[in-house]
Image 1 (cartoon, rainbow, N blue to C red):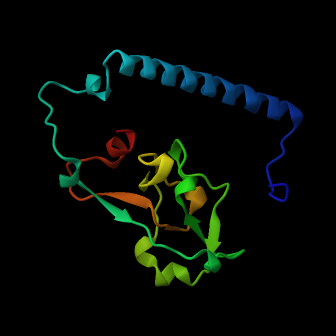
Image 2: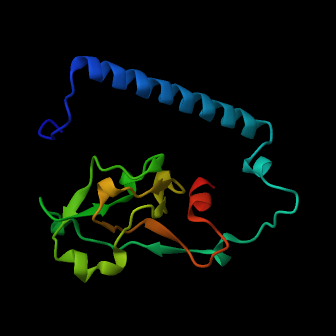
Image 3: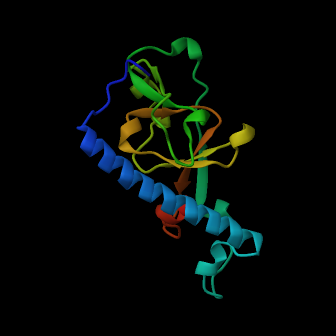
Length: 165
């Protein structure tokens, strides 16, 4: 971490950034607390739906593509990123602990390639069900085992809606 380059604006700019971030964090934390209270008393995302909304099996509209079991002996210093289960955070894919695979894996394992805005889900362990969205900062990247890529298979589900479910 200490060898990572980071932007260093002036102290005044840093203070402004912290104030902005703090405001957003407080809003997010308040929203999370409110949603938790709503769930406790029986509300869910259903409050946004009309009574005519159909409830249908997700599997009719989405498939989950599993990642590949890449070997840790193939990790290297330079190359293509590998998104592992621990990289999925609350709503996003983190780039802070990504490992790399040889650049040649990009073509060899192209069917495990990730794209911007892909919706990923943790499939095992304590984080099962945790969802994250791929951003440009982690690309180019491949998908590791125990992480699923949710793929809309028809036009009945909007990928943004899927992400927020």
